[in-house]
Length: 420
Ligand code: AMP
Ligand code: GLY
Image (cartoon, rainbow, N blue to C red):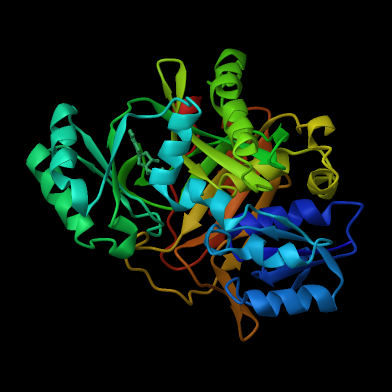
């Protein structure tokens, strides 16, 4: 079969690698892809937002499956657009289903309806600001304020001081994050360790993918600004059977059953951003896509034909799909441009040295200029390695990272350390 993969990051490089291993694949097209995805298929320079061009390309090239990497096209109705072509399966939910990520208020109401554990909250807009402030004053510091809509990963504020929180709430409602913060979700702060669980669903049945832990802050010891993610580990040692059973019983199953009961058109990934509060899992957020860099450890750990996994959605056989995991541990270390997540320069030439035999180098923000590989984004490369445990996998990733050079390159040296 011919397959389109939408996106151009490290996540898509890892998805492309997995899809390319399928015995069912004829040709993989990555739109627009990056120099890393080119090793696994044909990059086609059509941006994700050009839905009509993608539709034409899909029809011209007899594509029967489209896997959507990022959330924005899904929230904008990418999957709905293809409903008129029933022979093309889109892995990614309808715009309505994508609101699990696209609207924090939608997600909170969904969780409330289905009794899924999550932080207490209040949905605040210009009409009920006074009640919002009353709710804030009932909570204990720190205060969590979330822009309802997509805000490029920047829409969550965690504030210690109550008067500052009240001030920021007003600023958000007045357009601090544009339309995205016209509604704000005020939440109680949950204290615990975060982890990520992923399911692939057809809206009725699901398969669970390997879980992962992401390292979001720029600095070692989880200090400094939030980033898209500086590294990832899978499996996660504290995700033992007892915790995972609670995750399934209290969160994953009620979520999928809720989608089904509400007849929400959802064929795709559900990314459960969870927090372990003294052994009890709570939902911090849903995403309607895979995580990045989580995909760079999750997909290399899947020991199954991923196209047959996607095809099981089409044939409503996901419930019977036999998932197998590669033994061992995967650790991904992200190399970023100096200055990220603030201002940074691009166009720096990248020299890839010796890659450890247990490492895979995924491209995130790279491009070819005059035949040279150069940086083109904040997150540049994700180096994933396998090992018998976190220590071995991490040390292999760092061996490979140390052989890669570009001016200003930065990476965290403590990925996985807290779990060893
Ligand atoms: P989100 O975009 O909802 O994932 O929020 C971004 C980050 O803010 C999360 O990864 C958490 O680290 C933190 N966060 C969000 N909500 C809460 C909460 N209710 N309690 C504690 N931390 C939170
Ligand atoms: N690494 C977090 C995310 O993809 O949202």
